[in-house]
Image: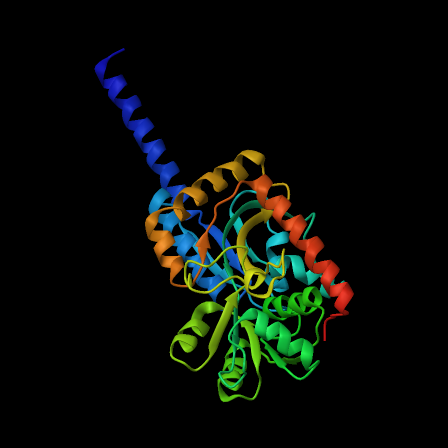
Length: 321
């Protein structure tokens, strides 16, 4: 072949590859976060988006779509094309909501597919310093001795913290008075003022308040001690409640029907990005530990969590207000 023809073919191939690369970058992945900007879920999602962009050059646009206790954004993702260009950040609320509200606009079991369980964090069990308990066992003993006297603050009916407290009540066979707030911030304010007694809440910023002496931290709610507060036992250890575990976890799902090879590719890219030291360090500031599971493992996790919270919700009679 004449050298000029060969040169022409090479230039054509380079041009084609360049155009394809530009198309990939322009065709951004839409990453739906069913929560408000600045929330923990939003920070987790933006950490993922930044790492994916650094690794592949393809833009990942975080789209906040709050509402309906995270169900509005979930419904939006469920209706998106199954082409790998829409991802959804899900949390433990994804397995709680169907049991709370039968009117959901999507079927979380059939409308979405698991990609990976990204990370999780425990709740922090905190009391006002005036409450005469310094351990999980002392809390359990006080609550049993005075049924209904302790006021348990939550960030809302059906919230992850509410159900963590309800699971404690159920497994310990005791009764507290639950006080629901519209969000965590006013609950923290009243807890530090002594208006309520107890809360299962995010370690960030409650751990800061505890270390400043404004709250007393008793335990964390994971299966193992939290790297963010290794000095604290788990509630299972502290109160002798074998099998107690309640965590706020985060995962990624895509619309049902997304080709298997795309799911596997997303899983590999996300796990690689999130297990990098920089990502781990970034999320550690939220007391979040990186996991990075297979799609199959995450699917089983979703089923197990759905069974657990549905059973508790039915037992406790918790319903949408």
